[in-house]
Length: 318
Ligand code: F6P
Image 1 (cartoon, rainbow, N blue to C red):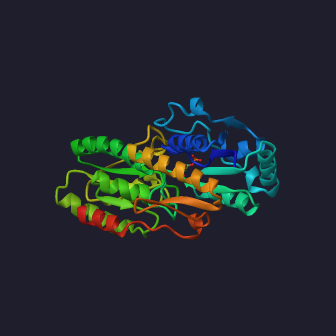
Image 2: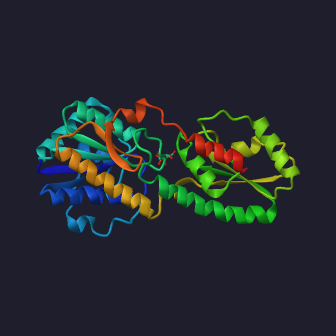
Image 3: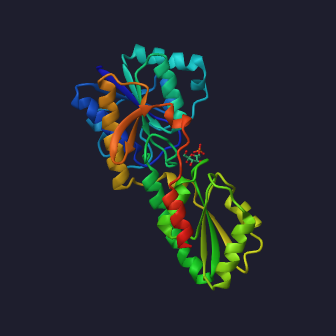
């Protein structure tokens, strides 16, 4: 291969730029030209490329977001869109592609692989909801961003003896909520993977209030319900004055943690090297601190489970 492309797709996540940089440098190390595709699969259809030389990827390793931008592409869900993208890549001598994104992005990557085009996926999303890897790029940073905000909330909650319901991202998964709950010492984590009894939660809150627990934190995954809905449902909490905070998109920004920078660099390099030795249709995963390849379809064919240990810890610590 003499020319490889890289794109970012789906929700952006801190560390994507470090992964882009690693792909570009690994290409250069192997005398391969690297081109970035702007705005994900939309840019692939339009042939919107940008050469990624040392200057282009200089100074981006610690920047949040993605210099290639990202977009969700309806056109790429159609056969015509996919064939147009393939034609554009072939016109420009692009022989392989690294896709950095979530499971939705990997569907597109699989489609290109099935059309005979070499593709490797790198899991980049703050949700950490991708089977085949212990961590996705951006998850650690998002947890730390949420933690920083929640520790500030704890100050005011303890000053006013209040119950705070904090809504975190995660689309339909509870990984962000659960990890953030353990890290922040929250009393409860409410996640879509487990059934929720409002009655039982109110009973536990009444008991906490009766034991003069000055304040309580509930970390709520957005996929269960909104924090405002939960506040309206938690009527009989024994006396807590409830307040709501929705962390929202701040969890997607900020400079990546060292963990995410190192993870992204490792994954970007490994994906590129795998492409260059002829691998395709696979995603990079970090399993027990070792980089491995598994089929792209694993990202959606197998449900990734929450850690039973963390679930147990939240219950023990409240
Ligand atoms: O998948 C990452 C994510 O941030 C989810 O946690 C969230 O629900 C979703 O993206 C929001 O999507 P959008 O950025 O398109 O509003």
